[in-house]
Length: 79
Image 1: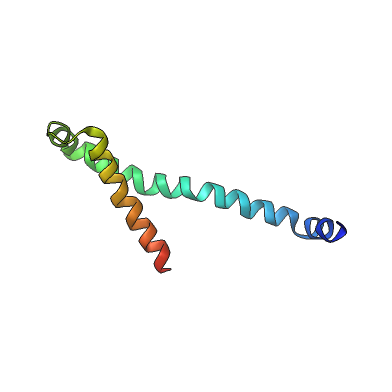
Image 2: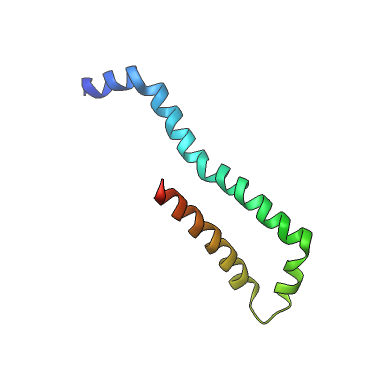
């Protein structure tokens, strides 16, 4: 038990900072990628055309999110 306590005394603050950063990273990436994606859709008005088609809204949104998520997963897997 003293080894764990020694580790936390020496690296506890830095370790907690790294954990907080890892928890915030997906949200920051989502905002950075998602805001321009949705902004472009609203600016060009493509959402009106897409939602008036026979494809349900949830499938259209899922396809958009899968493309972005797949791209991010591919990029993160490469590096």
